[in-house]
Image (tube, rainbow, N blue to C red; front, side, top):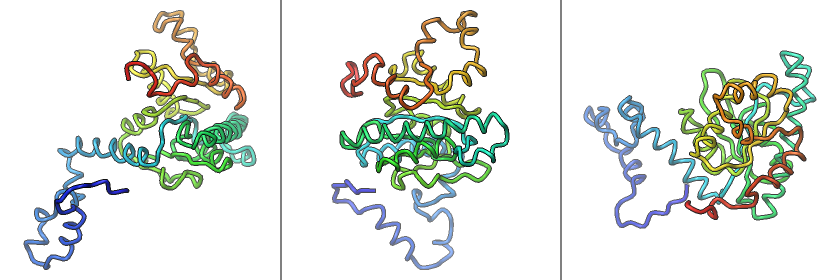
Length: 281
């Protein structure tokens, strides 16, 4: 991380290094003697949760800003969807059939990254959850184009590691789901949802709720695979029941492939408006 400090005071890192060289005595071995910001046991106390939340919000924000990331295109989708070449490893026939969306996510990310790089690579940078499946395809497509992409991983009970295509300096790890989801949307200029499971549904409905309630700007919101989404969610039933408005069904569009997605983004109301150009920001 770059040091933008302009202060006459001694730097905290200097004291951390100095503290490691103190004489070994009962006093210096006592947990109370450790510098508070260099004491993992202290930082993990329940009472320090607000501090940890702030740190998870602040660290990626600072590093993304330093990397010049102005806006992103978000890809959500299932970790279990294999690439077509490995479709025979899918646990169900449905998953095997959905493997085509791996290629669509990869191609969409490739095309969007090429366009991003034409403008300097600061806008419309692909961001995924950094894991396997559709997430891997998104980061892989950015690599295909020779560009950068972001991965927002999270620590899970089962083994979880970033896929190999995430740009190393833009790969982050989270403890709090809520802060991770904030980072997905803080720079979002488009949200693309591919078939997935509970995690994908959670991310999709949170983003839709923020847009529906006016807590987030209306951005291109694309659902890849009409047949999949209409099979698992009865959108019209929600509207007919009055639990959502009929107009809420216009918050998103169905697309089937990368070309349709890019056309939808380009023709979305307000397309081309930068976030900083929106009145009231």
